[in-house]
Amino acid sequence: MQSWFLKSPAQRPLFAVLVSALFVLALCCLLSLLFGAGGLTPQASLQTLFGNGSPDDEFTVFHLRSTRTLIGLFVGLTLGIAGALMQAVARNPLAEPGLLGVSAGSSFAVAMALVMGASTATLTVGIAQLGALIGCICVLGAARMQGQHNDPIRLVLAGAALSSLLLAMTSLILLFDQRAADEIRFWVTGSVAGRDTHTLMSVLPSMLVAAACVLYTAKPLASLALGERVAIGLGHKPRRIRGIIIIAVALLVGGATAIAGPVAFIGLVVPFAARALVGPDIRRTLWLCLPLGPIIVISADIISRLVAQPTEMPLGVLTAIVGAPVLLLIVRSRRLPTL
Amino acid sequence: MTATAFKQKPNTFSASLSADKLSLKHGKISIIDQLNVTLPEGQVTAIVGPNGCGKSTLLNGLSRVHTPSSGVVMLDGKDIHSLPSKEVARRLALLPQDTLAPDGITIEELIRFGRHPHQSLLRQWAMDDQEAIKYALQAADLEGLKDRLLDTLSGGQRQRAWIAMSIAQETPLLLLDEPTSALDLGHQIEVFELIRNLSRQGKTLAMVVHDLPSACRYSDHIIAMKEGEILTQGSPKDIMTKELVRELYGVDCDLMPDPMTGSPILINIRRLKS
Image (cartoon, rainbow over all chains, first blue to last red):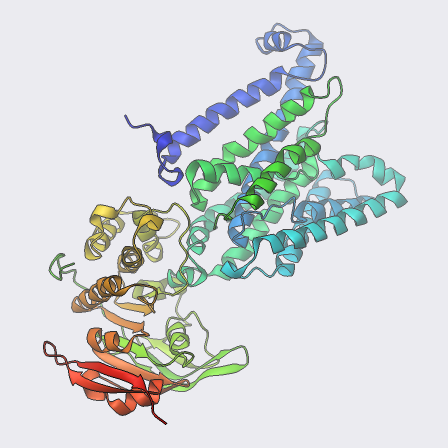
């Protein structure tokens, strides 16, 4: 049998790649339950998993670590998909919610809301998503996405400017309000630790809406890769497709930010890896982003627990350390991959 | 490629396309003003004219990519902008000039896009989609290449693959914007012969062409445009004169009939002596 891995990425059977990725994801989830910064050894964790642990150990494994794993799963899922969607809409392999100020818009909106006295989880999610939407529209508007004539770097520049502006304004708000500053410290760096599943449940409905948007537009979005006029010729409506996708991106990024704060570079690295594995067709890329996002976030989270023992490194810091070189790699490559 | 290489596929319906007092603008600049035109059914129409005469704009207007500032484009007697976009795409296919091919797409994958107008959320992929793709591969003589990556093909094969995508769309009408402009002579002939074969099966085709001699040879009907207006139209034999060539392109030439087909051949093209 010819090895499927030797074929060119676009010709590999999606199913085989997907199953392999799911296997790796299962492994990551297991490791995430076994390893931690605390005194609990992997062996003892394994014992606990099989039901032979002390109540303390059970609390660590089944409550702290499993929640953390679940949140990592969710954040990886949403940010990976959001990155792939944004890159397809902007026709730009560098379009990434974290870099383009979408996450920053989202955390700014939350900071504003907290200062003004909001605190319930549901309200925060909605506000984070609204902030993401505004950030998304601002940056795409500023860079004037114009199909193939769009300069990839220009979009990133506009995004960097918008991000710094929003982050500066967020810092300013926090300077004036010590209470809010304490409450939302994690919004500024991004973390999957210390969150509870309650927040996760409050985000789920809007994630279903985003999933419906993606399912509805995946095929037209793929045709947009052939050129604006080709898509029109095939009976699609490019402007409407873009509008729906931008709403989906805002829902996804807002949801992820509401739960873990702004985690940068996941939306860049995940689609980049997915394309390398199954080629540029957005439908295939999206499928693979589903397991790949969680794989990357959860393994980054495991590393973040281990490198700075006994304390932990915030996830957002680690993803930036891993993601920045990937960005430089893409920018430095002689020819930016066309999307 | 031979004309008899593939079997005839009957057209279940024909479609007519015409413009009535069509005006098209780019921003505030008027490109085409109050133009009337009808594409003759079952024929190959070539739209020719100097650069900037509005021929591509007209094609974009006819294919509802460019929204008119006034006037209407009628598809089967109905305003094309009032019809659902998908329904238009089942009757009219468009091959624009600015096509983009994503890295790593195969010919068959490209052709599959042509089935989009026939699919919906509930009807994803059916037998007739498979049939249409098989037929399109056959018609464009690409059967042996269906798993090849688009960017590994020659220019002519690549353009044939794009046309095959439009064939899979199974429309009675096909509009092409400069389908041969980036191709060398051999590849141009490949594409023009495919276009002629499609017309023989009853498709109505219109194409913007830069090269006047090819337009004369491969079309049944020529629309000659200058500065957004139609100077004249008709069969190449009837309308092609030294005076028309001079007026369109500002060059002198001599015309003689092709000994095989009788269509006019331009020879001895030279700059106009003032």
